[in-house]
Image (tube, rainbow, N blue to C red; front, side, top):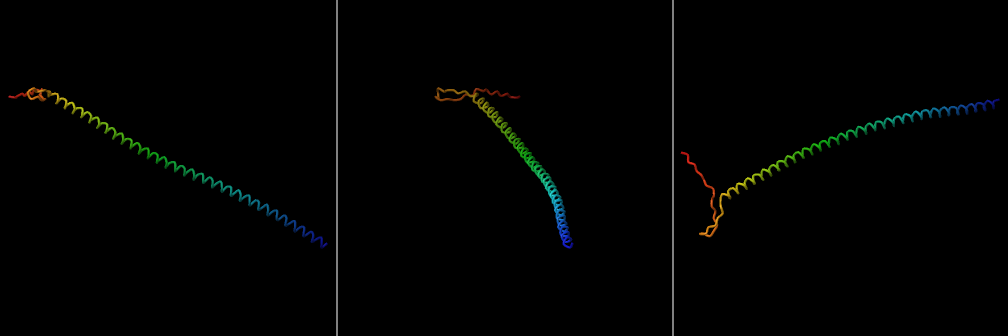
Length: 140
């Protein structure tokens, strides 16, 4: 009987160890699954935060680029307006110069038209004769 009892005790001990191992394995698996789920949640949260930060950074960079483009466009418009103003001033100055030269040329031709180019037989040379008669009115 003693032998049967020891055999029975050893079988009960072995069964208890097997049951405890199985329970520990199941508990470890539950803890592992919970930790894996927690890690997956953390990864999802990190990815979402990374997406939010990336989106915010791209938005800030786009705003900076848009502001820079607006500034460059504004500078380009101002430069074009200055060039147009200078060009119109230059065109007006050239036109006024041409008109002034035309008027001066007309005056020179009028002045030359008053004198007649003639040949003197006595002196055997050319001379000029003023064709304009000056009329002086005396006020009495």
